[in-house]
Length: 226
Image (cartoon, rainbow, N blue to C red):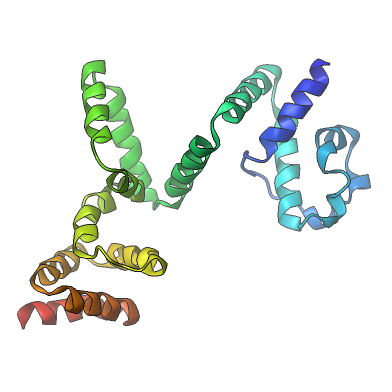
């Protein structure tokens, strides 16, 4: 009974665990798997032949990761899996989005976030609670903006105010454009944008999206001097 319980939990956890090994999944037919791996991956047996190589690689990597764990590590893993399954779907989606945002950060930004987290952990509980309360007062858009990293989080609110009506399909490209600008050029853009009526501001944004990124700073310098 206990064996079937952890195998069932493991099967659920596989879909959220990350692959950490490289496997030649295209060569891994079901009959080539050892008995222990087949037992772990039993929920996928019937459809194994139709899985794409990337999916096979992820499942096999996670199975081997599990097999390498000792008993305490397996218990801890199952506990985390159980906690995850108990979360509401909206909370799971929120945490996935936060993890994806973290993974997308440049390494330098991740270093800054880890340093900030260490500083936060060292604060007295009263200061931690005060900072959490301060963060909670920010609207949802502002809170999500910080997921883009500390550098972007410092100016994104200004950008959202100046470019409030960007079409949904162009928002990611606009953020990437702003992130790619040198800090002084980005400040020049914000200065110029504040002076322009809405239609001209939008025209400038689209111009910057379409030109060679290497030309953007020069365009902004010229516009600022006009």
